[in-house]
Each structure stands twice: as C-alpha cells, then as structure tokens.
Image (cartoon, rainbow, N blue to C red; front, side, top):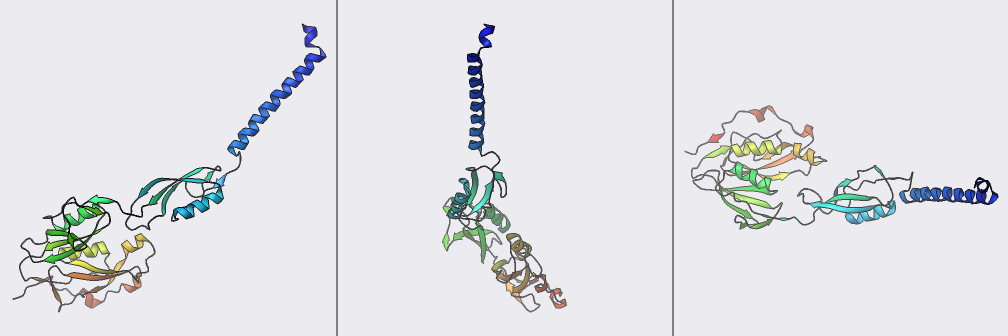
Length: 275
C-alpha cells in the first residue's frame, strides 16, 4: 500500500485533486466578491425635497432602488415630495440597495369634524389645531360671550362627525355679548404671531389678515419667529373697536423694521364704554 502511495499515478491524481480543490475554493471566493461587489460602494444621494419622478431618474443612474415606506400629510409641506429617507444622504451602500423613503401626500386625508360648539374660544382652537385644522374666528352678538356658537367651512355649517379634509380652515362663530362695550386696540409690535394672538384673545379680538410678503423669512421656523412690525388698526388713544373685531398684522424677520417709538408705549385703557 505504501508503495502505491509513492507511485507516480497516485501522486499525479493527488496533485490534480489538490489543484481542483484550490480552483474550486478560489472560484467560490470570486463569486462571492462579484455577488457582493466587494470593495465597491455607492454614496447615497439626497432625495429629500424631490418628486418621485426625480427620485427614479436619480437612483437609476446610481444603480439604486427605492421603496415608499410611508406617505403622510403635512398641511404646510409641498405635496408629493420626499420628506425622509433611509439610508441617509452620503451613507455608503452596495449596488442595488433599496432606499426607503417617506413622502408627503398630495390629497389630504378625511377626518371626522370634532364638536367644539359651546366650548370657550381657547379650548375650541386648541382642539381643532390638534386635529390638524386651521382656525379663523368671527363674532356675533350673543349672551354667551367668547364661546363657540357654530362651526363653518367655506360658508357652510359643519356638524360634528361630518367628514372634512385635514388642513381645512374652520370658521368659529363666537358670541360677542349683548353689551355695547368696545375695547382699545392692544399694542402688538415686536410680538410673534402666537404672542399677538394670545393678546388679542384676551381683548376678545382676533387676527384678520396676516401678511408675510416682505418678511424676509427663509424657513418655517423663521416664519414662526417673525415679529409684528405693523398693525391695522393701530393702537391709539383715539381708536376703540367693537368686541369681536379683527386686527390685520404684518410680520417680518428683519429686526430693523420692528421700530418701537416712545409714542407707541403710551398707556391707554384697554376698554372704553359707550355712555
């Protein structure tokens, strides 16, 4: 047997077998390298803000794929664009990797109208905004001061549980009381929209027209932090308006436009009775 193991035929067959095993193992590693693109990665491009058509063209050129993971509605966001992506921009991935994206819905979803009738103005506004709705107010004479008498959308009364579009503007009809009481216009310069609205609510007034055309605000956060630089009607010892009236506000992010003069800070009584 030992003589056979040292024979030329056995040694040739052994060498062939070893060579075959080496080639087989080498082939497996080459296949794995080719299948996984060993050492070859692609930098994920930024997809946020792009439409689906733009995403398809961009990823096709990068040999990447995408899947819409979720689609959500945001009233202030541009419709039909990518909001989030995973993996993130500049992450390194392999060819044919799937990028998961979240997009903004084009059509707002339907929700049930909440019931805010008989609520106070503050509670009603807070509840409607928590449902993703926008709110405007209008006052009419009523014994129920500053409480909701009716809720409308596009001039039509809306009942509780009616199906409406998320992001709709709801007009709250509020009671102004039956007295002839009038109020002085609050001083609102230098306040954000939220601060100005709270001050107007305290005086039983509301925001009417809001202007941001010349605000020089670049982001949503800038807009939220914009300050009132002009109001109409102005605060004056000679101007009193009926409870329930609205105040037009003009906002800016340019602090140079928010100029408060000494005459602006004159103390004026908040209410004025008609005798």
